[in-house]
Length: 280
Ligand code: NAP
Image (cartoon, rainbow, N blue to C red; front, top):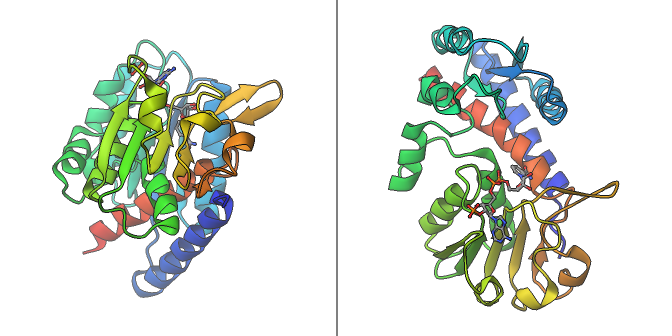
């Protein structure tokens, strides 16, 4: 089965839209998402445009704050302080990567954790690691939703994750651990990666290397979630050799059209959750 991330994201967006309409009727309020974009990095501009389009479609107020590449760290920190205190803003996101004069850790730590829709702040990372409720990073949150569309009960499954980034691999491991999976986290220094992948009931790959995972790396009947985005000529591909793997496994996400659309839908979901938490 090929997991249709585009369709699942559409279903999720529709649910979010309905909920926002219903809350607006009762409170006359809608969620507000503030996105800070620094510099002229082309992929960042495309990602932000997509976030804007999707936010507006579901009824989230989208506030774009743009700075030139040479903006000072202090100016950005002052803006975040202002947004932290602004009641019309439910979520704050600073688009990465940042220019050299700005320290990512200072920026991430300055966002009010209850408005940290990316789930990167130490409080949210700590909540996830402790198994508490909190804001979960969008990509792994979307991956888990896709996995649970295929298999509701993940208890006892062996999940292998390739990649240990704070953005993808680590939070993915925490989420699957919470689902009672047994976890193996692998990375560039892992020995015998193929043997480890072959033991996976669920394989999540977040690396950025095209065709890393081949047919003889995957177990029959497993679930494969491909987070990777790689350019191959004029095509975008994932980390998995999709064509040769797809017939061996139970379910697999394509690239594009798998995890990517779910990531943005989960950003909208996180924004709605932050908004709802402030209503009470
Ligand atoms: P990252 O920070 O560069 O992390 C990559 C991870 O892969 C690292 O842990 C690295 O190991 C590991 N790795 C690199 N080469 C490896 C190899 N040959 N074998 C095993 N592990 C290897 O990347 P990221 O931000 O997590 O992103 C990963 C991929 O996902 C990228 O292609 C990115 O574009 C994509 N992405 C997609 C979405 C989406 O919505 N679909 C969202 C975010 C990112 P070390 O730690 O040892 O260096």
